[in-house]
Amino acid sequence: MKKYVLDLKVVSVEALSDKHVLIKLTDEKPLPEILPGQFVEVRVDHSPTTMLRRPISINFVDRENNQLWLLVAMVGDGTRQLGQLKTGDVLNCMLPLGNGFTMPTGKSQKYLLVGGGVGVAPLLYFGKLIKDFGAEVTFLLGARKATDLLELDEFAKIGKVCITTEDGSAGEVGFVTNHSVLENEKFDMISTCGPKPMMVSVARFAKKAGVECEVSLENKMACGVGACLCCVEKTTEGNQCVCKDGPVINIKKLTWEI
Image (cartoon, rainbow, N blue to C red; front, side, top):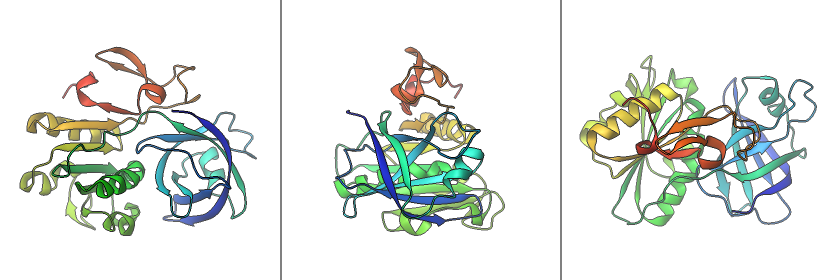
């Protein structure tokens, strides 16, 4: 896919929690083709400690309003600077990067999208495209506590939403792999993004259940195009760059002990 470097205009910046913001961007021209699971590399201006671009998952593409959404966790100087953007500001983005999730091939297929923390970000757009295709989508979202759950209203517009929290303050208590939906329903594909321990557990469940499974890896990245080799992941096909060969990879290619 062709890649672009665009100066996108900030439409709005909405605080979703004390450490998460939703940034909506637009352009004068129609946004390019973007696959679910791809990401952008954003240039962080006015941050002397942020020399490299920051990789951010594409949260949603609103074609009707020509908007690109980025769900940002403010965990360092660079992302905190992004949280200070105002309406009308310009954010330089390189996009779309990486490979995306596998879309359904039949309308009878049932997809389970599992997200933890800010890892829920790429699942919203993916879920919307699954729904538009005509297949069935269920979201399984996990967090430490209820206030850490993000965009629940948006997910509910698309499909069934199942929730777990570690402290039991919302949904079922425990981790995502403890949720009863895994026992009560059968799925044709599981796609997941979030902390690695969570994704390993989801991959282990999928392998045992005989269900195809893809994970969206969150290795540290710098260049975003496979040049710097800092995001390398060991696979059955040798070392691969997550930014170029991923971030979405089928668990059959990973060397995880599951």
